[in-house]
Length: 250
Image (tube, rainbow, N blue to C red; front, side, top):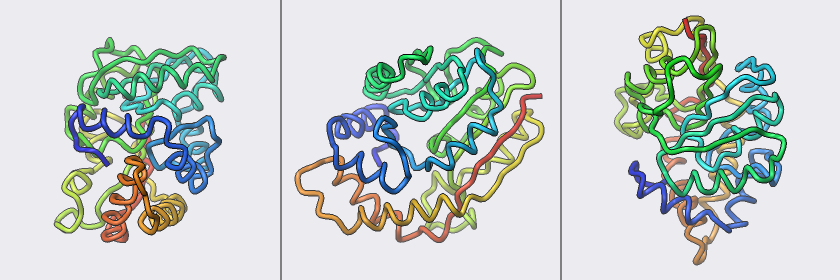
């Protein structure tokens, strides 16, 4: 995983461009089709759960927040007929998402630069927000409040991320220890907040990281990043839980 800066993420995404080995590793373990380029860890079955939780109708406006390469948001919009806007702070991610959107000809999609806590979208302008494996990079009150601000009343949010089993356990990355989805969503004014463990997603993650940690990445920088991250993640894998958090804008 890159550093938390836009420049660090730009380099990370640039390294993925054209790395078939990186994409194959993700897709095999997560059950994703080749067109769904991913840098996150949501499985194909998990994506179906997210689609159900968002309750989108054709023509609804979906914000894919911290959209990365755009694959998950494009797939959700393709399934539901929603209009998609993807926001990310890394220009390279936005560029790749725009390129990927060409493979989803039926989807009304646009991608623009923005931040988890500052999307620059009008208040109440979207019907649903999805944030896949990204809220942990800025799990602040401002980020949860921004999600609430851009949602219309009654709109839905679905977040996938990780939480520490013990937020005081310093073996876990600080950014994961900072995540408390229930508290963050509730404090931002959401209702019907539900946070669910998803151990079945974790099984796929563990298998992917085990393969990544064992491989020889050679001179592929995207594989090198996966290898290094796999080694680190597996050290504290059992100290975190995988969650799906959903809520309704009040």
